[in-house]
Amino acid sequence: MSYTDTIIAMATPPGTGAIAVIRISGPKAIPISDTLFQSIRNKKLIDQKSHTIHLGHIIENDKILDKVLVSIFKGPNSYTSEDIIEVSCHGSPYIQQQIIQLFLRHGCRMATAGEFTLRAFLNGKMDLSQAEAVADLIASDSEAAHEIAMKQMRGGFSGEIEKLREELLNFASLIELELDFSQEDVEFADRTQFNELLNSISETLKKLIDSFALGNVIKNGIPIAIVGEPNVGKSTLLNALLNEERAIVSDIPGTTRDTVEDQISINGINFRFVDTAGIRETKDVVEKIGIERTFEKIDKAKLIIFLFDSPDFDKTELENIRNRYPNKNLLPICNKVDLLSNTEINQLKSEIPNTLFISAKAKKGISELENKLLSLIDSGALIGDKTIVTNSRHYDTLLKALEEIQKVKEGMDVGLASDLMAIDIRQALFYLGEITGSVTNDDLLGNIFSNFCIGK
Image (cartoon, rainbow, N blue to C red; front, top):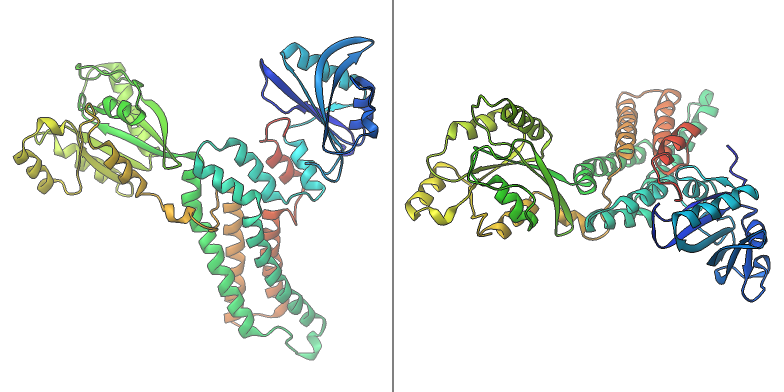
């Protein structure tokens, strides 16, 4: 595919709206638009300055298709670093398609997914991790996800990686130089300083890798399964958290036959709650399927809320959940606390430590529950300029880079020859370069940008 031709795509979502924006980028963006646009002041677009907007009509064979605003962005001071035209037309799907087809007939081609941002990367407007942050920013649905994507777009993550790569590259150059003088048996790279550098790089890579646990849940939300016996108030709790009647509530045990899911944002963090079928022995075929799905959801959950409503509940079920999922956070919650006596509450506190007491129906204790959920998140990491990795490709590549750095350290410890150590250094540099796009290939780019929306 040529990246020197002129491309066109919708920049706004498909469908009917007040306005729609059509984006054109490439060397012929302005000349083609000039032939199809008639300014109300008889201006020629090709003569106009960059970053200006012009009112007029899109015309085909003296037929007016729409009255539009045309914005001009001349390269290199544009998103793609090429000439860009953006046509703001009325939001009729018919008008949108008529204008796009008109431009296609006059020399444009349809843009592929993410091609505008790909051109921005290829033209040096941003590195690869910043380009990926564009997709994350578009997909962000919480304050925290938005904040992390903005930091990455501003180059915080890529700057940290490039600093590591530059420091390693300086020493790698000295190691390579030693190979040219292998017969002289000289060392240009100070091994003590090099060892300190490797330790520093390892620590930084480990911090970035560890941050993925937080970044992943911020990006995708924290899955939480609400489990317990039938009729303990699981659906009522879900409705109280969402502040809407999302799940069906009744006094009949086993009302929830399937899982019900929804999410809320608490202090900028998304939590995905799953209201599950009550766990109990049953002969009802449909209810059995619902209970099987309950355990499937628990498998995927980061936190299990075990809900009960009296001191007489079957405590073996709670222990079964603990034993079955020993590595998952489990939060016992006693619902309907307004129906319990102080004696019963004290009994539960002694029998089941760290129990939270609420009344989902009266929405009592819900704020305490939200604070408890937030305590699972290292929210302090979101403050300041701490880099948080959210991209699984970055995470995987950082792991590979760390593995190569560990190999170099091991080689240093056993006095490995410079030529063999240089192989591992080059590989570590390769992986660090893959993150920012200093090292790349068509398959990698195709895989990344195919996940973008068309028009971005």
